[in-house]
Amino acid sequence: MKKLKIDKTIITVFVCMIVLCTIGCVMVYSASSYSAEKNFHSSTYFLIKQIIGSVLGLACFTFFTFFDYKKLKKFKWILFIVSVILLCLVFVPKIGISNYGARRWINLFGLSFQPSEIAKFSLVLFCACHFSQHKQNAKSFKTLLPVLFVGGVFCILVIIEPNMSITMCLGITMICMMIFGGLRLKYLAMILIPAICLVPVLIIIEPYRLQRLMAFINPWASPQGEGFQLIQSLYSLGNGGLFGVGLFSSRQKYLYLPFAESDFIFSIICEELGFFGATLVIVVFAILIFSIIKIAQNSKDVFGSLLTAGIACVIATQVVLNVLVISASMPPTGLPLPFISAGSTSLIVFMSALGICVNVHKQSIKQ
Image (cartoon, rainbow, N blue to C red; front, top):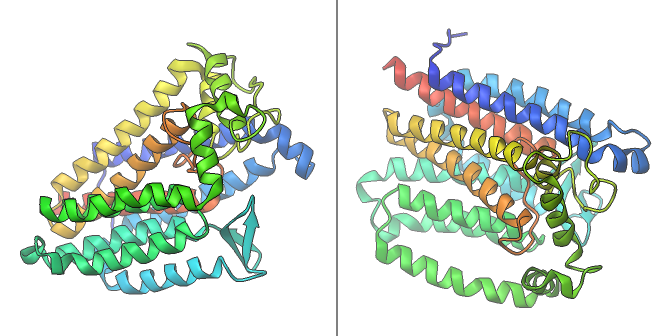
């Protein structure tokens, strides 16, 4: 195994990852202990899964730190096909898991995971490979067609689960990757205008999305219905104040706030740690994202630059959307907070992505 050259950027990425994963384990336990005891007769049910996910994620991080990222190019179509197959398996009875009217998980050999988490980074890899191989013709619309095809397939399969939040994340990531690849403004307008017009259509055709929009506009109109989760999240933020009610002292986790350990875990962070604690978490995310952007800027090849820029984009998009949702700044939608929300699939995939970033930087400073 090649010796890893340590520098400040690598240390920063690693420390930020460990800090966020540690916060995740602590907050997942705090947010889920009561519901886990009630539903699974073990207050540490979600904590144990999170710790296992962290350990597996650390192993994947280590592997990709030493795995030559350039070899990933040969897997762009393979990973696309695997991602499509996994996304399709979501709809297969006895394999796909239905929960709250959505089919977003699959169960294979006793292991359940969310294929859309893999699809996000599969899209990043495909775009990075494609634009690095066609950098001379990156501004041609013809060059964009394969990217639009791959991104479109992923978005269609995810939206019919239905999962509009991940679809938004995929769409934003695809647009950003095309911009990073040199997309012309006129082509950007040709893509964005139909996409923006499609959003209201997607909301109208699904009654639950329209209900969520109405709940966002006025959650107090249905305080026991669609507005309930948003109101409880705002209670969490209000209860936290500047310094919080104290670690493990949340009131909202006692079955008042749905999905407290996953999509709305940042609400519990705000309640228990207050404004200053929540701000520190955001600062750690900001340091991590800017470190990855720095790696992208210093990469010695286009592929490494696009790959790390795409990873930074996915992390930043999910953090921003998650914080906007829990603060009632956008309509409620289920999107986990990277490295912190309960969910082993997300944790392992994001930690693997950071390993790739470290490998890109390692090879850049070696040249």
